[in-house]
Image 1 (tube, rainbow, N blue to C red):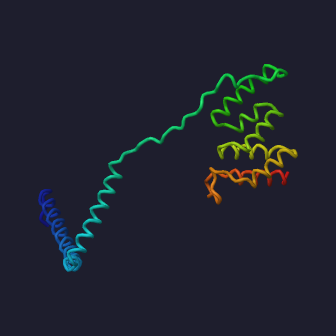
Image 2: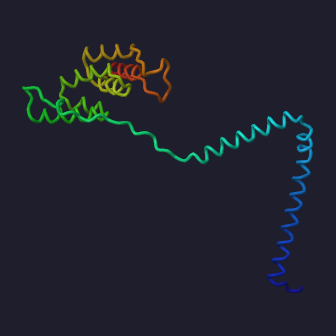
Image 3: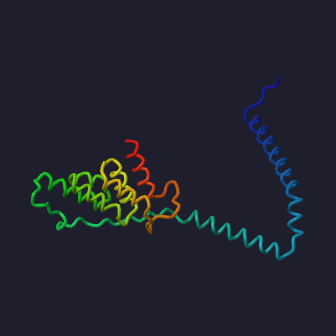
Length: 194
């Protein structure tokens, strides 16, 4: 058996690969011939419409590719006013600090933690007031917190919230959308279970 050199093997491999590529290209061309002849048979107006549609799709895809990533807008949070941080006269310094921390958390959007820190009676009143808040998240968190409390006020507030309609909530909310009505219903069920 004659021995072949590496260059001979390489030449043979390149020839074989190019021959197979030519065969595949010829089969693709033979497969496209009927489609191309069908396209050539289209009326001129149809060809223009299809061409315009393909160009529009290419522009749209190109625009999406070039668009880049823009960061989502960061919502501005209101600053805590020092005038809001004033304890009631009968409170101790610890309660005043807890109330101030609760006010700060409330302004940053952590409503449940804020209500829990503001003292028992104040927390209940704050949670009851939060059931009428502008934001759905605040109402939902208030409903969750009221669901852990026992009492007539909590139950009646939850019942009112379960029946209420708000502008920022759709009539039939989806699974992932905020719904204070749904939160109130779940809190009532939690209270009923004990």
